[in-house]
Image 1 (tube, rainbow, N blue to C red):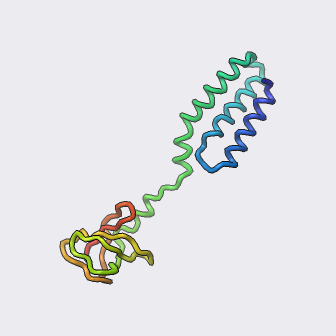
Image 2: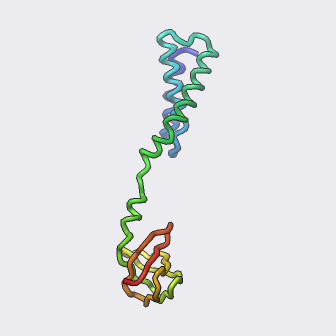
Image 3: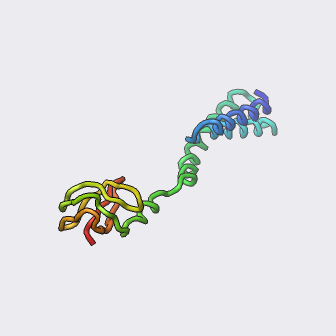
Length: 142
């Protein structure tokens, strides 16, 4: 293939990546095609089999090396936001005996709650959030 064909293929693959929801797979093949096109433009990779081999190696190598760090860099760390509610006060919607699960209000939202304290809590009694397990708050009386 000509160098311009490789570069055009790379741009089409990059456009496909932009048109599809995240995942970052196709973009690395686009990068591989553009790099092969540039190598072909400067006179390297004359044989078609070397072009296809270089395209495969560059695309798969870039995918393996850069995809995970790129996803980690682009995705926000929500753990800090969840951990910020530990220590806040929650209000159980009904009485909870020690070890019992129910609902509690925290920051205007109703959460699943687990009374991990040694005594029962009464409905609407202020409780301290001591941990967050998924979507469940571990609470204990203040």
